[in-house]
Amino acid sequence: MRRVAASYLCTVSSATLLRNAYVEYSDDGTITSVGLCDDISSEENFIEGMVVPGFVNSHCHVELSYMLGLFRRGTGMAGFIDQINSLRDTGTREERMAAIRARMKDMWNSGVSAMADISNCSESFAAKASSPMYVRTFLEVFGTRKEDCPSIISDVLKLKEEAEGLGLDAAPTPHACYTMSPELITASSAEGLRSGFLSYHSEESPEEEEMLISGSGPMYENRVRCGLETPPVTGKSSLLYFLDRLREVHPAPFGEHILLVHEVCLDQEGIDAVKEMMDHPFIALCPKSNIFIHNALPPVELMRRSGIRLTIGTDSLSSNDDLDMVSEMFCLQENFPQVPLGEIVEWATLGGAEFLGKEDVLGTIEPGKRPGLVAIDHISPSGALTTASRSRRIV
Image 1 (cartoon, rainbow, N blue to C red):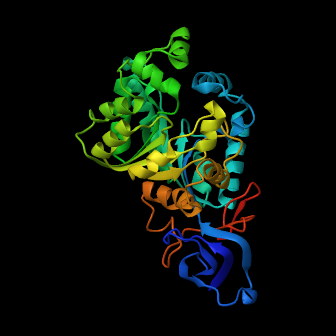
Image 2: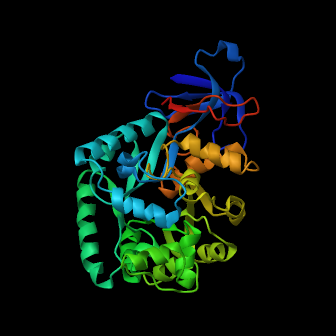
Image 3: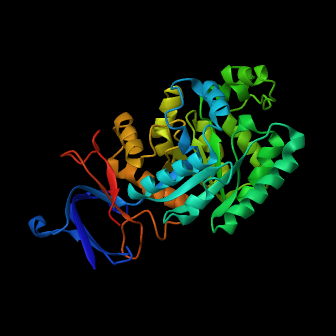
């Protein structure tokens, strides 16, 4: 039996932070007991900081790890997409795969126990298959021409077979409204929903909304200038457009776990539509990526009031300086000071575990679970994250 104690313990199963508390666990990391310390001076393994469950990174593109430092900030989505298109094949395959392995190791050591990862190719598969981290892989597809839909689906199903051959949980998923024909959104959603899970980039920027609502704005103009097909102008938000495409798969309600990534432009109309249509909706917050691309943040307070389950992701190193969950949590704490830190920790742990269907094992520090234990240092006297806060895996 092993034991660790800390100035603060966030079990997530409890709504409050425990002061001067301990966790006992077996050699395989299974939690056996939690309690308050009688005398911290007698604790052999006492951490000046906070202990939390292992993190769940609910949205990452680890295969883009070689892109660190290549992108300009503040270009908006149109400028960001131009950079992706011009820089995507930078470096050799060996260099790209080495960057993936390094970042997978870093995330594990910093306390990430599970991840929902986006893949466009097979370069990340070996690193994910050999990692102790649980990873569900979402095989993202693109294509704006209706006639290409069958071949794109055929290709992604072959990629799915390759991933599953390495023991990975994997299935197709649509990317976003502006990179796909209506037919491909529905077809890829149908394939993904067979697995019980779907992840979709939704309402990431005002430019995306302009494109769908009025056929205008930088993203629309960019695609026209490049000779690319554009999504239909619906007069509706991109989220409502996506929901219309989902209805072509099967009638509501949807019992599958559906993750809406970003939702920077979410409004009450969208919330009402999602809750009416989906039994298990989730939203992935990626605040540092949103700031990097277009200096905006999602309406977190509106999301909290909605009751839709929130999660936290890091996005990729094309739109972030790191894949650090504590850094994302600190960003949320600083921009939404009304949210208790314990709730933000819940988003970074249990929220993602529930999306992945792993809440029986991950997400909270409770007897019988094996979530991993993470120490966060440089916690303020009031129990808040600071600019110096960093995380490391204990178990």
